[in-house]
Image (cartoon, rainbow, N blue to C red; front, top):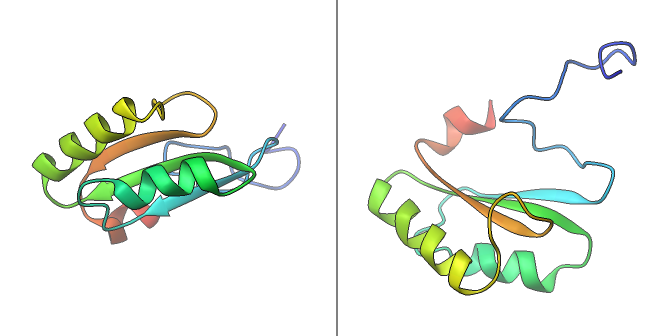
Length: 90
């Protein structure tokens, strides 16, 4: 359907707004505090990607998100990723 509409198919790095809301990239997430706040406090957020260069920080962000009820894969959830933010955006 997306290809027919002239857009490339959605992939794992697609941060565009879905049918239910917007997606946010927290590029320098550290502990994930901002990511959790974005997910819980901004109306219409479909999901947040908490990205940090350090794998330890991504693990901490995932744990903090889960303990605050923002599990990845759910509406308003936080997905923690480790890696370079510039590479993730493209």
